[in-house]
Image (cartoon, rainbow, N blue to C red; front, side, top):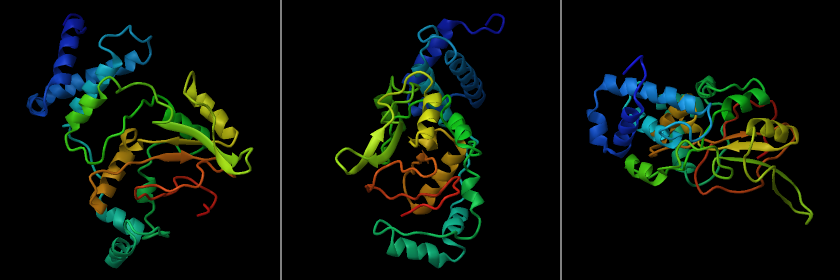
Length: 282
């Protein structure tokens, strides 16, 4: 390297090698080399977000995959302790959790009040701004990229990367990553969902702010890939309930509005309020 600059040919070769190797090869890369190149890839990623597309080689999709692969075996990730979550949700008595599993799990809905009073264990995992709706939108959406869905029973993460090749690092995709919607009375007299727009373009953060002012809900999926704190919470929840993975969505709804219409999910879910001054109607 000359003057601290990395030759583009070396960079392109390294990215191609990393993105096509198997997990055994990734694990054999010395830790210091992995950390240094991961830092470089992140710096390049931030740089290519500030210039026109196509002017940086390799592409941001290739850089996103490189960062993904090099991050898989990095130390430093901590999971929210399952026992702390259990007491936070179900209280300090073991019977509370056991009763939920035996009587309600995958069987019937249940409304749980505060378990141990340690609600901060969940709210503290929200490492984005919740001081105001505008601040939340800015901290969550600004710089966010598309997160392709990962099957919960996918055991080989490299198989997922093969399927998702070329789609990592692209802009948020409307309908897959984000929806901006409200429920209102339609011309037919029935209530239904109305979307603010069909696709994202321009300054989508500014447009989402306008949508919220008009009573729309901003629904964003894949929060476990966008927030370190939420990732730790989801990993702890997966361990507590014996699941391979747990996903997280966030719904930013202005007061007095309804986002999604009445519906049911084909999976088990919990709905803790992140920041709410109004009671939810169930």
